Length: 308
Image (cartoon, rainbow, N blue to C red; front, side, top):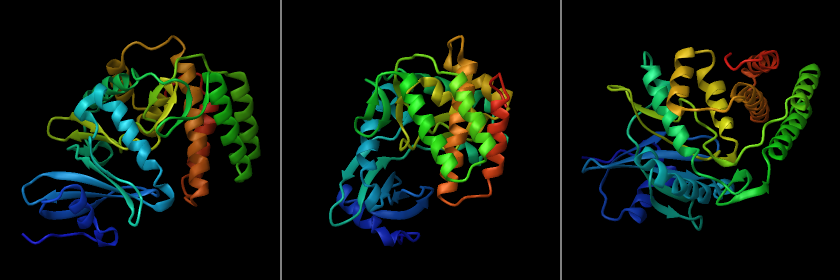
């Protein structure tokens, strides 16, 4: 069979596989969704095996160490539900790249008519297992916690202050800025213990078997942080669950017991996620969702519960 490289020659994916897996005969190289920070390819061999190659742009090569570290933290807890690291090639004369095992499945975001209750119950179980991985402090993760803070209150105060400042500097609505500032002052977050948070736990990163609705795993740990576990749950709510009660019920059933104040805390955290997303989209020039996100922020500010 002739090898098909699907436009991957710009990164010499064949050469990367030759370095990582000498002796492999490549059948196909397929571009997969990556992002602004990296390019992702699925590589299939003539024997039927498949791996994923993640190639880092030079200015983001430091994220390689982060992903290797976080997948290493996850592996003992969740096993095959996350990719395993096959090969790590640091930046040198070529691009930095990592070869990962391929987790089978289709992103839940690409499917329609899913058994959401079943999938989200499994997702809740997976999230709870991730949150058993304790961290020494609060902060952004690389291969350690950067600029660590000892308490959740300090960490979220810092994060809100940074994102609110960005919102103002980027031309966000003045009244909305004032309302968010007041809300944060009036709703201090609770004290918790820091744990590993995936911090991108949404349907685009959940891989499922569309035949059985089995959750095969989760990918993309580029945003991982050490934080309150409810920050993860809130991101799943804001990005994917919205007002879908079946999804929320499934997630909560799978996750298990929550603290008494979980609704108030996740409301505050959903506000943070919406604010952060508005800032990010503005920075990268993706302007068409901004009004919708601002509407979400206004709704969250007026909400005492968790759905919506």
